[in-house]
Length: 408
Image (cartoon, rainbow, N blue to C red; front, side):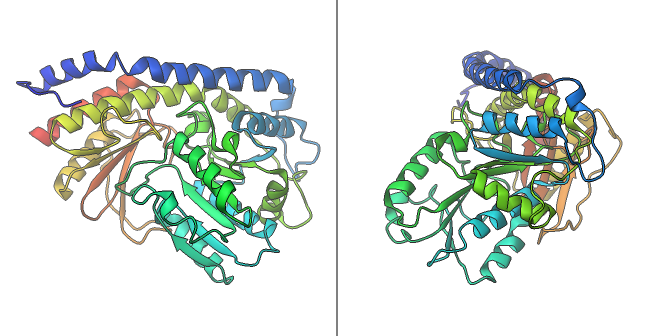
């Protein structure tokens, strides 16, 4: 909502606070539904405190690990899951999802791979090159710019469809759960080879009260350093989907023929507690996104999501159009974090990125993006990406401090 008149930042913030009372009940309703689904899934698994003890060695007979994976399967709506500390990044989880899906669909003819949300996240591009090297045609379309019906008939023989829910560094809307439902329904109706639908779920878990597998996706993947880790899990990743695909995924993680019976898990308590808390943490971050969206829109900046839009991830993108302003904003985020407030964010080359990346966040876990943090590609139009946040109050205060340096 555009606020027509305000004399200073304090007055603008006061008006936004009044407006947001209309937005928060919907976020809290989704939080409640997700809590109940997780809570009852854990109860049904009959987990004891002994199940949460660390395992070592090969990880044989780790009943607690198996019960936690049953919980993830139930919560995310899949037949089976893989939740392991050996999956250290979201990119690795997505690599496993793609390789497992290709192995599952090995007998196909057309071998077309269609990504429907534009170019995937930069760190996944080497994996797409690997897929391309196997003779599979990579097709990039964006249903957020062109209706699905415009080209679905052209690609009806593809065998793999990839969806990235979050906008990432792209200046586009994120993919809503209702849009995912429509895509899956259309694909199942019109595509001839029953394509495997793969979803990058990063930054979007528990933003709505349904997950892609509830709607018919074949496999989803993400990181426990993001939403489902609840800020408690210190490492790990997850995949949920069809049992036959998960079985193929395991081959790529541990080696063919070893199965899910191997793989020690040292942080079971943190994984389960993080999942249990995640609806609460995600709801706090979403409230921050709504506040920031209203604040920076009224200060004249292009922002995604725009005020009043459906929330599809917990990433707030602010187009600053200035390297100097971007660096000031990132310093503000760093200074506002609970740890390392005197550190100065600096751009650097990171594995998987063609451009230098600059990051900020005084987080308890390095790289955690369910904690309030920010990053950006050091390239025009200088887009600040804010994500996570344990407390709405922290997010709100940080946004106000960023606004002060922008209008200074």
